[in-house]
Length: 337
Image (cartoon, rainbow, N blue to C red; front, side):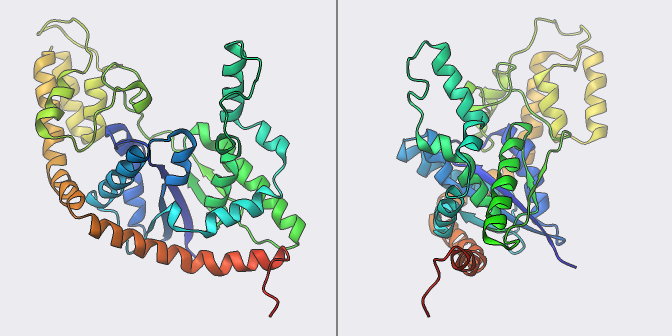
């Protein structure tokens, strides 16, 4: 029975936080151990350059994200784990796809339209002011990421569904022009059960809001951040509602159903906010202590991370290199002999 190919990219512009773990990393780690799948997980460092022109930040993020996934138990025997920039076939494929992608399709991309609207709202005479070609053609690079490995399923948030549809359109167009079904057409997988955690200020946890709790922060700083989480002014002993409470939301994202129900009862009994923050810190710290130590060990041994990623790149290229040769041959770019 053929395996299902699943592909996920992680943009390398920040430090992984609790929200990343619950929303993307934890389900991906589980998928990496599923023997019915061939999972591809990659550090999307070309994508990072679209908005981030800080080399130190991108470099640090690549190390931190790779170390995070490995520390949490990514199965690199079953999964293919690599850096996007280590696969030269991807930018080559991006150009082949650029030459069949309709400009009108790119004009309709949400990120581009939002940037144009922002300029118009600001009264800028040039609707394309400050917009680089990386942002404009980003969906084609994403299509190349997906089509390069003929991914069947691509887990994404709802805001990314359009990009999967674009990858299908571009893949179909290439298949039609060159007369063969080279590319499988990917399906977007949206899991509405995946928790979206709130951050320190009650808004969605996001580096753009500067309200994140880094996954492997030191114990001292981790405790301080937990203590900074915004709460209401209800006194100890007053019944408290778990609905909309960031402390309970984070706790229940890590706890078992039984533990969450028990904590819900303590809310009804009026647990003090200080006590809840102490409980949350101790509960999360216990779960993260072992992975945090492994994460630090990996950061101190960059040679090991590099070796793992190079091994992943070798596995990825064993598929990508011959496949790209087929595509180039179909487009008239094959060798003479």
